[in-house]
Length: 419
Image (cartoon, rainbow, N blue to C red):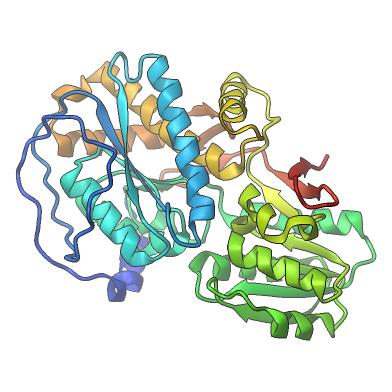
């Protein structure tokens, strides 16, 4: 497999964000890591401590946002990953050897993701990493995993160009180009008369910029009129100016690409200012953590989905039951994708272990052989059956659109899947 050209392009595009340095030693992997976060280093290093073989539980890194405004998404990923750890360990882990998840908080920015990846690779000596939460972070942190030859599986990175970062980069999150257009088509089905569309997007987020391009192209492809494009920041809380400008143009549909906190506030302010048309939310709004932000005013928002709790299959039934038992609500897409990413690691390890015992392999060889196995496997997951292309792009068949339905007092709400 040769991705040298695309990898070089991706790395050059992120080099301004990365510093280089020295670090790492030759300490053998002799004990199971802990889940306690370590203090991130201020020194950026890509040199990994790679000698030794595994002893005890198999460490898999989870690098997602547990703090910052991105935590509304990352917390759901933590939940899904922990459920996977418990479920698969109860079934024997990797042919009798348990797995151990090692969590590092990426926070919401590139520096946080870089530090988390370095700690997991160099200190915790994980065999692979699930993360980060945002595509914006992936473009900066994934090259570290690539240079260290550590498999990375993105649980929620859907921007264009993620798998092309390198040979060790894959994702279980379907690209926005496949998923996003479905919600616009669903809006047209609900209101075939809609003509005018206003688009909002977070200009400081790589994914939102990638997603809005797809949305805007879909608007044109459907013969609709794009009346305005309004920009904002993911840290914004006041959207009165942008919302008023859009409402004055009388759009029939508003499309928002942002994150849960900013996106929820934008939905709320649009409704408070009198907008009554349909609203489509992008993947960053695809979380039940959105509901406490816009409450009753979330009602009716359409969001395309790569996961449905109602998807048939034994593994999804088990995941759905475990999630609802633990959290008393239906599992969201981000939890399902994190569960799936951990599942892929475990099942690839199981297959690899039958060929050559993973606890006998030196860490560099284990990581390399694991990466190869991940890409050739087929997996029955909560998302349905998935596989990967040779460059690490997920191959998935089933997609959905959900509409938020809220109680009138805004106290409760849920994603209702459209037929």
